[in-house]
Image (cartoon, rainbow, N blue to C red):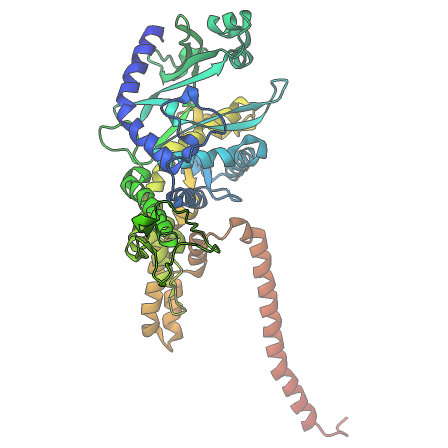
Length: 552
């Protein structure tokens, strides 16, 4: 399947193809994400070195972090199940035990993600930052093991995109990935043990545990795929490690049922394999803010401590020029100033206005203005206008939805595959197993701030119609009854609850609703009985009054 020399040739071609992007990525990293600014000298990076040498205005850095937080809040909000999978068969999903099983597995998956030891939250944050700054991210979900190599859960690793190289298939989707990385010999020996390549074993024999060994992890479609086979040939995706140090050596060859390395792009231009992103768009503005901040600081310093001019006759005098000091020689015997400022106070209003304008461009590029969308709301804003604003927000955040296709759904497939490997799907109902064997797949449903914002238009339409209908139905109960028959309140409540993000756990269960309806029926029956007893009691009183006392 793999040939060592061909992998090296492919790697050189992929590196050449990506080189123009590296220039953009490196500059964006230096100005916006310094902690990942090691595209050019990855092996020479030192921990703790100063990475802020080009930054004088931190505004763009902060805007990027706010954009990352907004993405996480809208796409993958913590504390709720924002992504669900189910069987792609309507009839099958009508079976209660199938739905219940899917709900249990979804809850179990989110428990694995939210386990603090999985690293999911921190690694996702770093991947989103990479997506915003470099137009690309790489995530490696895997099985987490304890010291005894026993599986104990899932782990997540956000990988540096500077070592990730990709190729697309005919449909524009990534199908081949090279991950070029380096390890110390001792790290490689710990990772692969007896199966480590000869270069690692030689370094350990020569007592060189810190020798740097270069590797490439290759993942590509299995061109010799044989469905039904239990070995690597029966898996649609092939993988292998190549040791570049010394004589090229292939090792750890195998296969995967689904793509194990999840690489996604923010926006993918036609005929380009690598992504583009907001940072690329506003890079000129970020450069300008750095230079303007330098100029503003210089102008401010010159205004506070202007250079002084003195007469040439004073060249041999020592003049003290500092706050709180007596400057001898600054005034002659006739009271005339011998020292004069060469620069008057600089007017910085124009520069500050231009800086604010550039900051506004940066805010819009990283969607920071979305966080302030409700600041100008007044008390007279109607419900339909509120939902219209949410709908507009969903339109503006549309690029986020592309991550559902390239990142979140493929990552979920990998997680389900790992859950199966851990034996967590062994309780699968027979109907589900038969459906999967017959080729019926899974579908993913998203329930997050982005999906709700995109659905807000329906709620806005309902309230607009209600407002318009109010004039027709004024003082006409039958007209309102017709409206409610057309749009039953139960259906409206379900949709409004979803759009407003009301947790499903807050809804009454079928049993609770039945009990509530029964209690309402009993109360109504009691009220009807009391209403009937009133006339009966009055009739009894009247009859009693009409009968003479001695009639008996």
